[in-house]
Length: 279
Image (cartoon, rainbow, N blue to C red; front, top):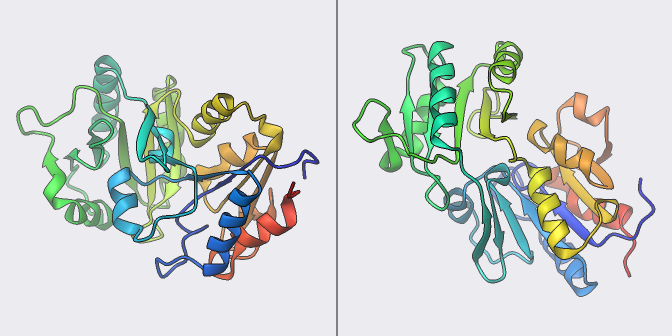
């Protein structure tokens, strides 16, 4: 635990601040409001796109900034303006697409921010229910990669859906084949079992977006508390002065970080209460 007074609090969304039934605890909302009253910057860092975030969130949250799509974009939440976005250059896009095709993976190629809920997709022909579930969910925004002009010139990311048994092998192979990219693993929010392997520009991650924001606000990482629940939060938890996880995180993450209550039992509020020095 870092002894510096907290000046920024960063929370993951799904499985951390958001409860399993898709609602927020009134206690957690009050805790976030209290942070603002004490001059502490409040940030949500999520893997969701802006479209997915807005579709899931029905209230105006008491936060200051939103890091979305795992750091592809940063929004000033109070003014609803995008203040940072990153995309993949065409040559790198072509290399990544060829690599995933050669590995016989099922994947999507997402359009740039703010339309990165639109995507083209490549299906290998294998049985992959979670992959097709995601296509069905975004049917109005999905198009086959084989269509003329389907693939974006400057995509925000690629996303491969693999089963849990093969995820470590695929993750290692992609990391070796794509050394200039950020290759990030997360658990599927759709079935809770499959693995999503997300491929971004090399400068994209939750921690890099948070570092950019902290630099703009002149806040040192030692003065930042972060809480998460999954593998795609690890770089953020390592970077922050204090990183903690909720009780519903995977066991190997709970062995590395201090554990708060679950997302359904106000883990965010517990982190705020236990880990922060209110000024």
